[in-house]
Image 1 (tube, rainbow, N blue to C red):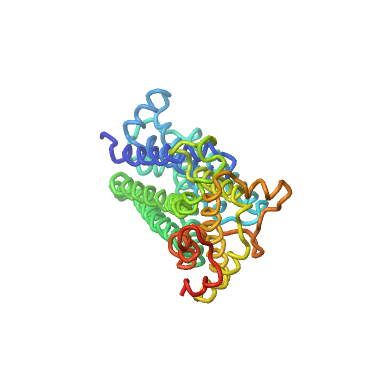
Image 2: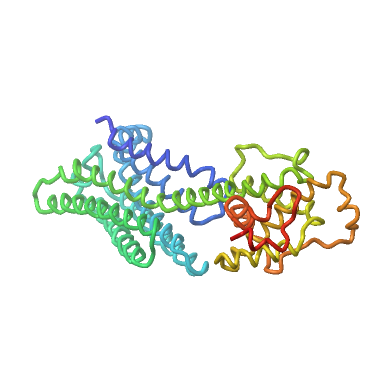
Length: 402
């Protein structure tokens, strides 16, 4: 047996864990991220140590026949605990409640692990079995109890996972619901795996031979269940990350027209500290917003509240809601101020304004930079405000925006 049916899912879990590693290093205190990483690591270890070649190697290195059996059972129990802890932390709630429940799960399955090790030490398994340990020693004292104990522990975890995820899926939407339903499907495969294991063991108790259920069918079901469940756990987190990045880059792109409009008048346009193009999206957006604010700061002496007021009325007259009208009015004021600054290369307006001149601010609250940027490109109000070169919008402003 080459163990490829075990090593392939183990490698898949390793790849998924590697992808998660940078995020874990950045936020290792995040219990949800730690739970996902622990789950992937344990799933990979289960398949690695359950592979027949690995079983033979571990038994040979330790010199203890079948020591791999309790090792795999302990890893499976730890995997079950990690699954339950992940769902508890994923669903959220008061930290003291989730922390207490997580500790109870860890303690409970910790006791199972201790019991598995103890029962193996008390039992007698002299003949090495690489693929049929469960059925071969199904009637051996202590080993029989060990086998039943680990199967019951996995069954409890599987039923609990299906119940919690299915109930939670009814209360949420989007990628989270899709992930939870995938997890339910994965744990249905796990329950099928446990059914074949129990079936083969019980058949042995009754003098029948259904070992193929445990040796051939169960590993396939376990592999499918683990990989499907891992995909369900990772999907919502990955899609949320992709969605956040998409939103951030969309914001960066939408700020482009306003950034380009203000770049010629920004005090730091040429000699400011620039970030590299491969920097995180959040940092790119922060840099662009900083450039915009720098440019607007240099334009404050040229801002004309009258232009803004006329533009606001024109935007409302075209059917814009108050927020949109405010953005179009601010954009129109910026466009006119940029033209005025270009017409004053010596900065006479800035000098005459004096050091104590307060910046013009919107009475409606903080400016919506994204809406302003969009308005610069698409708003007829802003286009009218730009007007013929060298003129500012006056009494005919409403006429020119119709």
